[in-house]
Image 1 (spheres, rainbow, N blue to C red):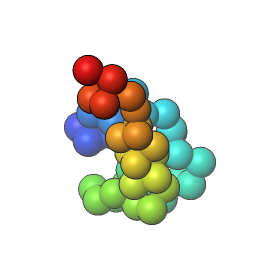
Image 2: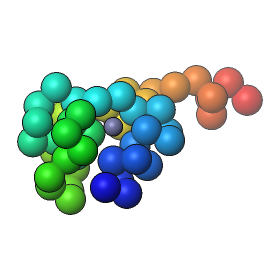
Image 3: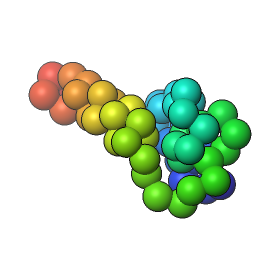
Image 4: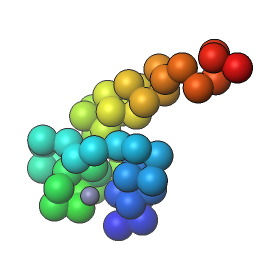
Length: 52
Ligand SMILES: [Zn+2]
């Protein structure tokens, strides 16, 4: 799944819930689940932007 791989590109790991896009199974759903949003929200809290 393209969106799953894109998640890895930006640094996301796998979600434990198999229903999430970022699950290790590759994600059967094409939309982001709560776990996916949690992962991306955490990634968005990085210091790269505010550290400039
Ligand atoms: Zn993966």
